[in-house]
Structures are given as C-alpha cells and as structure tokens.
Amino acid sequence: MSEKQQRIIIPGGSGFLGRTLTEWYASRGCQVTILSRDPAPVSTLANTNANVNVNVIAWDGKNLGAWADHLDGADAVINLAGRSVNCRYHAANRRLMMDSRIDSTLVLGKAIAACSNPPEVWLNSSTATIYRHRFDAANTERDGLYGAVREAKDAFSLEVAHGWEDAFAKAYMDNDLQRTRGILLRTAIVLGNEPGGGYGTLRNLARVGLGGTMAGGHQFVSWIHERDFCRALDWLISTPSANGIYNIAAPHPLPNKAMMAALRGAVGVPVGLPATRWMLEIGAFFLRTETELIFKSRRVVPERLLEEGFTFEFEKLPEALADLESSSPKAERDHLVVD
Image 1 (cartoon, helix red, strand yellow):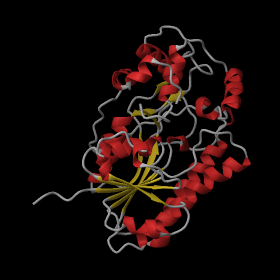
Image 2 (cartoon, rainbow, N blue to C red):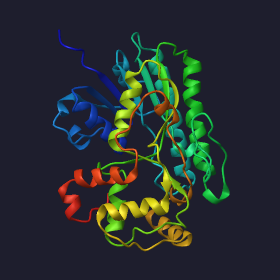
Image 3 (cartoon, rainbow, N blue to C red):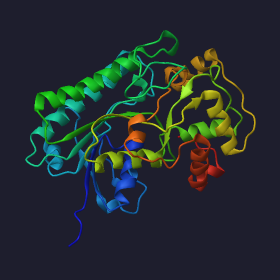
C-alpha cells in the first residue's frame, strides 16, 4: 500500500521563505497549498518540476472563507504571513506590519478550531529579533534577554515580535487547540538563492567592492542556510515531542566584520569599502528600508534544536556561503543581479 501523501499548508507562502519551502516539499512529493492575498500562477512561486503538487488559494489573511476547508486533514500549517519588514517604518507601514501578522494568526486559530480533523502541527513565524541587542553571551530559548536598546533602534521591531507571539498564544487559548501541536519559529536571517531573500544583493555588493564592514562591524549576525531552514522545520513537524519556542538559526553567529569578510571570500573579492552609520542611514533612506536591520546585534543560538537531536548541515558561515555560490543560478554568478 502506498504511503499517504503529506499535505502542507503555507499561509503567506508567496514570499522568499514560502517559495523556498514550497520547492523543498513539492520536490519531495508533498502536496503544498499556499494561501496568498495575491494568488499567482504556481510557476512564479516555486522553481520546481513538481508544480503539479502545488496549489495557490486566495485568502485575505483576516476573515474565514473557503480557504479554511483546505486545513482539514492537513499534516502541518506553516504560517509565514506578514508584511515585509524591509520598508520604511512610517505610520501606514507600521500598521500593516502589525495587523498582517496578528490578524492572520488569529484567523488561523479559528480555522483550525473549526476542522473536524485538525492539522497535526501549527508552526507560526516569529523572529530572532525579539531578543535583546547584545554582544556578550548568546540568546537561547531558555536564557535569552529582552528589551529595546536605543542604539539598535529596535523598539518597534520588538513591539511587532511580541504582538505576533501574543496573538499565537491567544489563538490557542481562545480556541482550545488541544489536538494541534503549536510551535513558534524565532527565525534568523535565512540565506538562500531564491529571489527576494537578500543574499543576492549582499553578493552583488561584495562583487563590486562594497562588501566592507558595516557600522563598525561589532554587531552579531545570526543566520541559517536555506536548506537547514527547511530541514529544521521538517524535523519539527516530524518530531511529536517538539512544541513551544525554537530558535531557527545556525549554531555559530558571528560579528558583521567577520560575516562580510566571509562573503568577500566566497565571491573572490579580497577588499570591500566599509560603511559608517551615517552612510548606512542615507542609503537606507533611498532604498526605502531601515538601518535597524543592520545595526542590531542579533546573537542567537538554537539551543533546543541541538539538545533535542537536530543536526545542521551548515554550522559555519564560510561553508554555507561556498555552497550557495556553487549552487546559485549561472545567470546570477555571471551577471550582477539585484534581487
């Protein structure tokens, strides 16, 4: 008798992480259903030959609708919905960033509660940014510190992160979701070749000599290779004892100075111009983003994953970058492409 096809639901799955997970699961024969506010042809959402295993369903991320029927009998829900933080934090974007995360999380709780055969596990995005800006010890799930720091300019990011996690807790409490395991993903920067993830932009900066130290270079960067990101989530789904909060990050964060040196080494450019804080402020303004994404020291380690038996394929950054360079599309290696 053939093995049952695994069904994965990915709300907000049309972005970088969603496309990465879609390719991972669809290429392994799983049925993937993406919930998207702007449904597009499957071919634009996953670079895979297994697109027959991918469906894209419309939802508004706020109200129950026909989309909720697809959750019934699913093996896992991986909620990635939320307005990108790669923008200027003016009032309208702040409201969109907050509401898109909270509304989608709360309505998913209602949809799961209405299922006669609810999903076995619900993984909800959070962010490693929730931890305190620090340079000493690493933040773990057990011993992490919290609180905004003026130097990091992270007060609003922390407000969003806590609101997101509070909405997840409220969804469980209000809907009594005892039959579905709940997991919060405090995810670090995911490095991957799928467009939209930022690695292509960093690579191109390094290739044209702009891959130097940023804002002094002492701030720590936590990261994870795209393949380990997918493997970690798959491990959490398939491990019945896994529940609660997990840091999704490689075991060895490193200072920005060391990260940029590793990046230059990966692309074969030995020198990069450094950028001061004021230079980055000007650049962020014109790129319509925020410097908090660079200034904050994110020193996060995956204590629970390591203690509970998950093994990383890429523990250190140089080997992760070497793999990404070797597997990047030829067009991106031979020409400067800004994602």
